[in-house]
Amino acid sequence: MGGFFGVISRKNCIYDVFFGTDYHSHLGTRRAGMAFYDHDTGFQRQIHSIENTPFRTKFDADMSKFTGHSGIGCISDTDPQPLLFRSHLGTFAISTVGIINNAEELVRSFSGPGKQFMAMSSGSVNATELTAALINQKENLVEGIRYAQQTIDGSCTILLLMKDCIIAARDMLGRLPVLVGKSENGCCVSFESFAYHKLGYEDHYELGPGEIVKITESGVERLQAPGDKMRICAFLWTYYGYPNSNYEGKNVEVMRYHNGEIMARDEEKNGTMPDVDYVAGVPDSGLPHAIGYANQSHKPFARPFVKYTPTWPRSFTPANQEMRNLVAKMKQIPVPELIKDKKLLFVDDSIVRGTQLRETVEFLYSNGAKEVHMRSACPPIMYGCKYLNFSRSNSEMELLARRIIQNLEGREGQKHVDEYADSTTERGQCMLKAICEEMGFDSLGYQSLDGLLEAIGLDRDKVCTYCWTGRE
Image (cartoon, rainbow, N blue to C red; front, side, top):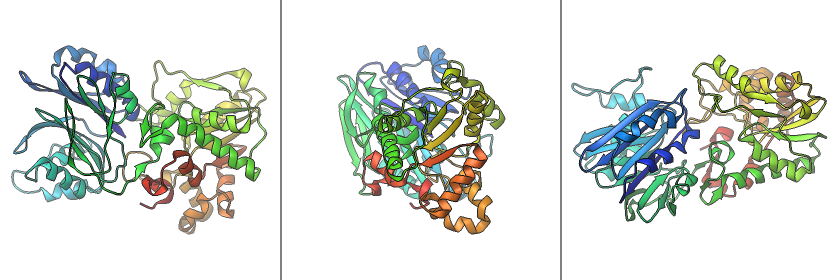
């Protein structure tokens, strides 16, 4: 997905930007960059690949070269950024997070003699460069940002570093959060609230959907009022968000505990809770959901296996799927005393393709597990995300639930996706049984959409649930 962090301060802000950006590393695995402005030396920028090396290691040698009282940093799963631009709107650095589904169409609109874009190795255009080009079509930055966001099919959250300020724009439907922190020396802007709390900033302002603000050392000035409609991504709480962050006033870790409790509560009501020795979470984001499930069910919580992460911090860092699977396998370290002859119930944050989960089940059985039951902390994923990078696939048939439906009924089954997603229906039960047979689970349960929304605690029409329902 990606994330960004920016600071404008009365003092040198290099290390605030460095650590604030580093605290967004859980949001992306491919590229990272920082840009600073100094009144004497002007703009400075550096971009590195972080596919196999942590952000801190990559940028440590650059820190002594940077100077400035304002700067931005970003973690990206897509294109190298921030980028520097000079246009009739001034000189600025820009970072974006989102998806441009109509990028090729927009690029063609710029075609003509003398008009060109730099191509990345894949041949595609850098999404941040394209966004900047759209912004530069208008006479001022606010009009340009609005034009870019309205023209883009997908979503686009934007951070601009100017010579005298930072401009932040939340995407039109607020699918991602943008928060401003404040200290006695200045202000920062961030996706993750905990990132600036650790740096001495306090909560100051949270942008609304489509809102554009100017940030200076003194505070926030609204340039564009927020819209009335919001569709914030539910996966921020289920998976992406860091445990101690808050979005729209709802804490991530608290939501995950509550989500697990709701799953257990509903299974107690309908009689589907199995008799197990331990409840466990699939590390790491499944752990708090499992704690909530264990607390509600009064079944012991345990960690039958742990992840060895000092040298493999992210299982999906390698680009090659075979290597990703091998890394995931190498990270799983069993606790035999908690596995052998035990009946285990695992809770995972979600089940997307199921490849690594199948290997986890095989790993547990090979270490002597008697039964392995699986629970997903969200409903079955039926659609690839159109707005962020989560669950994006070349084909929806790559998604486990859709592939199982195809196996059961072919094209006819794809007309009944809603029914398959509901475990109380005959089709829903058939899908659960088929997944259990393929994956080796003794039982499988998904959190209901109603249960997930109850756990988040926002009005359901403010939360994006497209990947489960296919409805915007």
